[in-house]
Structure formats: C-alpha cells, structure tokens
Amino acid sequence: MRHFISVNQLEADEMYQIIRKANELRDRPNQLNRQLFAGNLFFEPSTRTKMSFTVAERKLGVEVLDFHIEASSLAKGESLYDTAKTFEAIGANFLVIRHPSDQWISELEQEGKLNIPVINAGSGKEEHPTQCMLDLLTMYQEFGSIKGLKVVIAGDIKHSRVARSNAKALTKLGAKIIFSAAPGFEDRSLEYPYLTMDEAIEEADVLMLLRIQHERHLHKAETSDYLSLYGLTKERYKKLQDHAIIMHPAPINRGVEIDTSLVESEKSRIFIQMDNGVYVRMAIIMHVLSEWGIIHENNLIKRN
Ligand code: CP
Image (tube, rainbow, N blue to C red; front, side, top):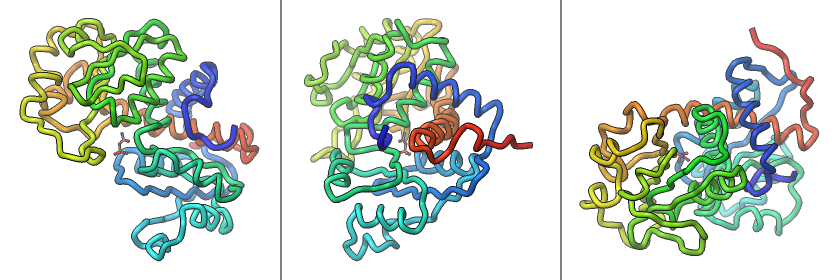
C-alpha cells in the first residue's frame, strides 16, 4: 500500500482487520513505544475528523504538530507538495490531509516523491475513507456482519464523498445499496437503484442520512419542504423496521434531513459513529504505519 486514499485499496479482509483492531484498541488501548510525529493538514473545515484524528494520535502517543493553514507559508503561496515535503524534512512520520479537490493526491504525486504516508481525511466529493471505515465499524457492532444488509443512503448523493466511499466498500462486503435523493441530488453515474424515501424507509436495515452540501452547490438549495418530502420525519421514523438504525456522518442540518427530535432517538447511532471514529482512526494509523514498516506490532506498549 502507498498512501491511504481510497476504500478501493482495501480488500474485504483488510476492512474487517481494521474494524476488529479498532474494537481491540477500544478495550485495550496501547501506545507506540517510539516517538512519532503527525501533521494534520486540513484545507477544509472539520470538527469530527480533525479532532478525532488528534485524539487517536494522542492516544497512540503520537506528537501532533500544530498547523493552521492561514498562519502557514501556504498564505505566501507555498504549494501543497512543498508543504508536505517540509513536514517530511522536519521529521513528520505521516500526514493526514483534507482537501476540497477531488484530485489533490494525484497532483501531489505528479509534483514529486513523498517518502511518508498520507491518510486521506476527505477529498472533494470523491472519497472519505476513514468516515467509511467508522461507518462500517458501527454497522459491524450492530449486526455482527455487513453481508446481506440493506443500506439506504439518502440525501445529497451528488456531492457526497461519504456516499461514494460507503457505496464502494459496502458493495465489496456484500451489502445491498439503495439510494434515495431529491431531484437534482441524484448521481446516475453510480449504478445503484433509487427509491423514494417512503419506499426506502421500510426496506432499510441501515438508514444513512446525508447532509445537503451547500458549500458544493452553485446556488443555495431551497430547503423549506425538504424534511417533509425527502427527510426523516417522526411519521417515517415509525415505519422503520424494529432492528433498523439511523446513521449520519454529521454535521447535521437539523430539521432538514432529519427531524431534530430524532437526532438522539433510540435508533440513532450518530454519536456512536463519532466515538467509533477515534478507534477506527487509531487502527488506520497503525495499519498504514505498519504497511510502511514504520512500526511493528511489538512497537506497542500496554498502557496502565
Ligand atoms: N463527518 C465529518 O467528516 O465531519 P467533519 O467535517 O466535522 O470532519
């Protein structure tokens, strides 16, 4: 493996290996027994991904290099590649990058050779592999297996990297994907069936709601009727199967894709997803560092 950029890089057994490792790290937190440095470079806003990477790194004993785009030499026109090479030169052992471009990793690779691994923390509308892995962990904890699950992905599919990463990974693991989207939010280049929200809700083992990605729209979408037409209302919630769960990568547009009273309802796993994000990111960091030969399993020391 080179950089951790896409869920396509992972075979099904590697996905389960990361999921199981995340569960193990939750129960038995370990720290690495050598000093390592991480650079978290976020070119788009983030709360969950950035902070859970920071917690994951600190739990592993990794030193997090403090970096703010606006106070860095990026403001003087330095490129992403030269910034990444600078981190490499001063001793960063890996980078975590979020960027609005779909292509940043290929642009980075065209400019030269980076000798430290990069973990993708969200690229444009194409990939959010660490979000996808925490989503898989959440489903695995709930159902024990992903195979055969019916997962309804509902919302702004056209602009969603979460939808793309999850659809690819879930298909590889044997789940059935159903899309549900308001007119204009579909992406027919992805070959999955579409149902209306009323049809989809009764099929779902997992209802994965997506945020309207206003920041990726040319014109701000009108949302006054969105909840009643396409969102999870209290009436639709009652039609979910008994065992069904609700997921959402967050941030949430409360009262748009989901009635605000349902965000912390019995079926909601939204805050469990966030908690899982810490452990899955610990497992991914270890997986990548181990693939690069930077750590070995015996680099771990048990914490008291
Ligand atoms: N789910 C997610 O990526 O959230 P943030 O944008 O807050 O990181």
